[in-house]
Image (cartoon, rainbow, N blue to C red; front, side, top):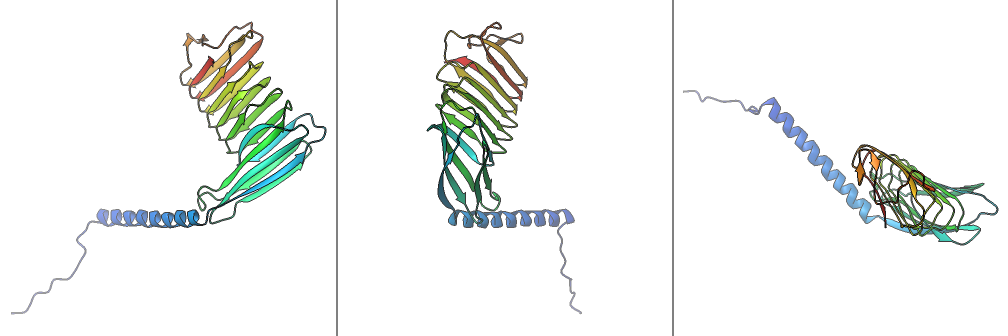
Length: 257
């Protein structure tokens, strides 16, 4: 009797074969991503660059920081001292510093997908009382204990955090980030707006009262009643100061310290 031969064939369904292919692709991508991350961590390098910029006779200082994180502290009169930490991975982070007129520009370019954790963090010592404008595309901005003058901050997608301020006026705007502000003395005015993020401001109690305007399309407003602000912030629509806080999607909290 002739021996029967059965041909080999794949009994798996097309759906099963597709699923295995997808899983295999995902596993391969994860392995490659892990290798890239590991190599970047091994080659990670951080260097520090320090520069002093003489300001001369300027009425306002503009800091255009791009993707860099920025921290502001009080420094000497007539100059700005810049201390930058530049972190690189598989690819070198591009860091450049320039000045034109009253503007200081910081270039901080790196490929985060290839070099996770890369970037620039810059601390700037600014003169007391000089109006300062900070602009970033995606960097976070912090400021500590600045006195007098006006501080204006705008970020495309970064958090803005300021503490112990003694400035006359503070203005903050971010596309997608939180805004947190605390003051050591009562400012004249506060303006804060974000498309997607929370806003929190705390101000010392004192003689100054504030005309308060708040708006959140999707979020809670602390201690509000029928749309009128009755927060613990000293609110008085006829007050000598003003607070304006708006967000499309986020909570707003205003309070006295």
